Image 1 (cartoon, rainbow, N blue to C red):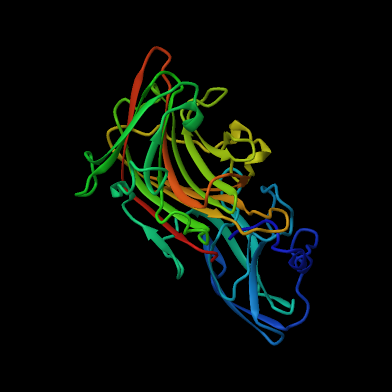
Image 2: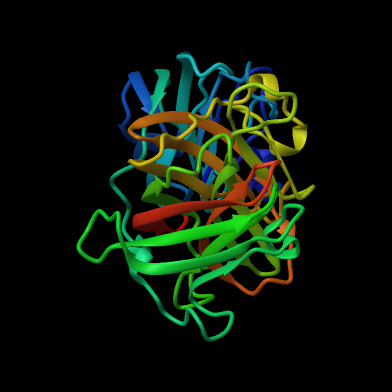
Length: 397
């Protein structure tokens, strides 16, 4: 997992930073063999693979450092990735510029052993340019495919399967919506049909549709996620009638909630065209999605990532690369990381982090789709069809 802070105070002392870059590891006890990447230009995240050996103990962890912090409001010298593992095989976020442009940087991998010795790879000259959704996964990954077909327990309590609500206390908004969903619908992308999500209500009424992955509470070890699905908006789901189209992945573990919330906000505060918002769990509010920021830093809408006003009557392909970071000295519950987002094959590096929040939820993993109304003259009906709704997740990589 990516982390801006270290796992423990002991490790913190190992990684004390010099001005502008991480301090060099002394001695030659630990040797790092970095096989991927080599110097060059890469879309983000980058697949890092390395092994290490030590004459002083077993290898117990890796970190990835960059010298480029100009556009990132985090402490200089802290690693972009950190994990307590014996072999490095991970997709790692590196920064682009705040405007999403290419960013040249010096990168190296550090490994350490059970005795506290550390060693570094050679420096790489990396240019981060563009974005990608990972399509190869480490051992231990799990998949839940075609969730739009899973009707498990959909009418028998707060269990696995699909659920909906339209009240302000549940879905937000100012007014109540009438909501419903139906399986095996058209338009569709496969023979089993899509799930149709319908919302009817006045101005600022929200319809929330969520799916809980079975078995409930059995996914606590999973921390990295690729959410891949297709959605189709009805002809009435336009900027005239829609406040926002929302997509969220959520996890709860050990009394903390990790709500990785995104929405295409058609009518942002202050006017202007549609922008992406990210969910700030610490304040329970939407904030503009601004690259290389923390949600609680109150980022400016002027710098938000633009979102298309999704065309209706056609299928759109959405892909999200998301993470829950490891606990560390600064954030004992870890953080949320919005990595890269792709719509219809156009991927963007977000590199936005957000805090977890205490919660009464039981341990769970799931996804949300939501539609919010915007119509000052009467009632409106919005509809979204979802197909090939797939979740891939794996543990600490």
